[in-house]
Length: 503
Image (cartoon, rainbow, N blue to C red; front, side, top):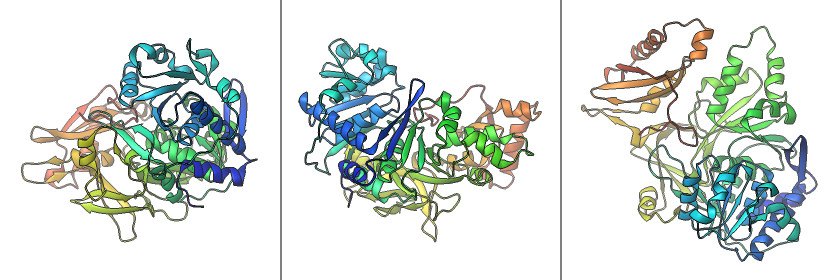
């Protein structure tokens, strides 16, 4: 069946996989499991809960870490014809209140990490009428506990869903400017799930690691995995990441480059005499075959590195405004260094090298931000991504930088700082790097990996970093050479998706 709504996804996977395990997660010291049939039943109880409170069609905020409760709450909201507003649980209460008010939220479903936020809701968010705690222990006075309501509201729920109305309001966290509320419809999300090509057999185990409020995790990690009949294991915290790899032994994971690079640094200095299979068993749990990477640039050298351990790393590309996947490499059609081929429902063109996308996954617009919407979406429905790139002769897409980050020199030459950053970042001594114009110079500000330096006997970090710059400069035209070096002793400030803030 064609997937026009998220409800279609849940109906379809329940028909095919009802008695199979959909989720495994840690509850105290135990691992709990939920079947596909239970996911459908619990999410329908959430829809009935909204109906009971006269919240159908309203905006419902979800604030918490990745959990089964979060996921069935989301499904219950969108499959009732209401609008889910996933918020970043790591934000301070003041920022959460501001987003809740901007999003016209009528009810908040929150978890145990949000005691401080929930305590101030009544005072700071007067339009919020209901508070629902995912755990009984953090229920507010006058509020409700989610599992109590799921029990009270058990039963089937069905309603007609308009696939082209907003169902999810998801805030971006860019490297500059105010967060924008991206309006996504059921069709946006369902068509992204349907057209993103991956090859995973039903029952295969994946592990969900990324924050659930990100579109990459929600669409690709949860909705896509459900559509394929995967067993999704929820990582409770990054502190337990290594332990949970052994517990769940995943075959597939969806990660961002930052996590892939962290794993790389752990593997980098392993005694080469230890068999790769033994290392993979200890680090990955022994079953990992595929890592899908997205959200930022991935050093292509890491693809070859992980292949030594029997793990394929496949890079993709997307943005929240496109639900989010625009292109991806898959297990049978991939090219290292590219970000894959555009999805079948995505048309791609280039305007002054900027990647523009049109198709059924492109957002409705930004919530109550007509000026910003007009800047991103032209009159013909083309989304201007702000990324620069090109297609090769085989149809694979490549990114070369960000349009707004271009350095334009007085001689008219354009320089993409990301191109230089990616080249310098291949060296293990360079942990983080930012390239910018400084006066008449191109400056690289570098946060070095001091642990790597210590392990490899590098005493003069400045001289070693300068040598890296010199090596880069020797093959570059004069206008692309980095002529100024600044060394940091702390990490760069980052946004919630761990991208360096440029301004």
